[in-house]
Image (cartoon, rainbow, N blue to C red; front, side, top):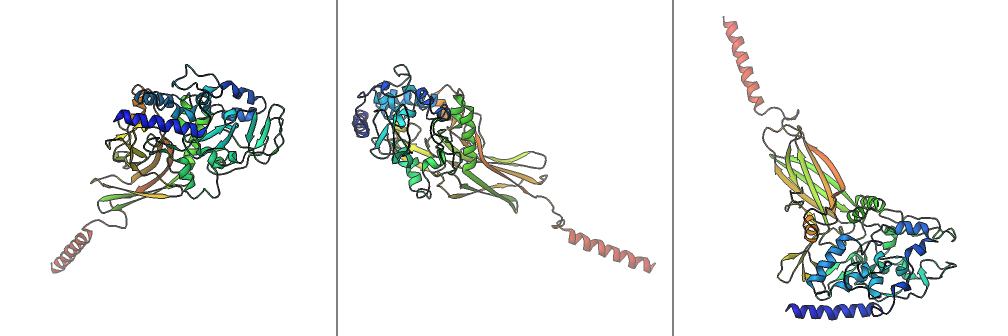
Length: 453
């Protein structure tokens, strides 16, 4: 059965590659300019790109570890399928397969780079690397008046549309058709698709919205009302941090902290506390989270302490192995293998067992209850957080030595509230009315007795 699946997979991958562009090996990596050449006139844009997830798309250690595992377990069938969007020049020039850095030219190691993107001349669809490339020295981009002494420039409408991004930021299993990544479709079916392109958020200074960036696209070019930035900021603060790009790491954290809002209500009901958390996907044009969603995690953490600081309730914490409390509310995707068991290996995916991610502009309401201990010192302080990390610890431990790589937990949003417990001033003391009546009767009896004496 496995042999049949691998044969089908090989045939479909070959078909996908042929549909997307010329046969691998038809061009040389030397047909493309190294990004350092582009830096000569586009220094500021080069500096933005350098250290971005695009620049390290192939040297990303998490990607490489997973790609090597997939290659071993599928007899190399996933090599070009995955690498096509992580080192497109490496695949087009036939330097991949095999997976790894040994056979790659220096330019192919630089991931999704300047001359590749600006040599794309056509899209054959959405997903699985559906691009065609023409390394003919003509650079394609968003301006119709560009003039350069080094190369010819032409306007490309494709470069201004989300469909350009959708060629790679949409991935389907070549055999089962299971969506591995649907960022483009999430945007297309969402509320922003009529007014906002991917580039408006991910290639402008605005964190979750379009913001004009006046300036020059090159040192020798004209002043423009808007120049697209090339930081390509997403939510990956883990790998950018591992690779030493502090700028991109900080920008990713800022983007995550602007993507969602959290509202908190906490109240006492008899002997229980009821906590209501409202999470809104307020800034992302796609689901939250998106991307490699079997690895990504966004979850609610609730921590409750009494007046002395003693913890009385906790949901969504990490255990000793770095895993999220299994009873926590986690927004993610769980893929299923052929036996219906959960798997984080996308090449094994045959079904989606669970997907509770938050749609753009959607608000989720989550409730938590716990018994209030007797004799508690109040007030109770309730802290709620929406946390995020690029990969679960279990996922990382499968790829590396246990604990070798740890994804940072980033607080996307938070709120605090208090619950009064015990005897509030307006509540009185239980049974006080009876005591008061008794004391009054005793006083009256005492006075009558004194008069009688």
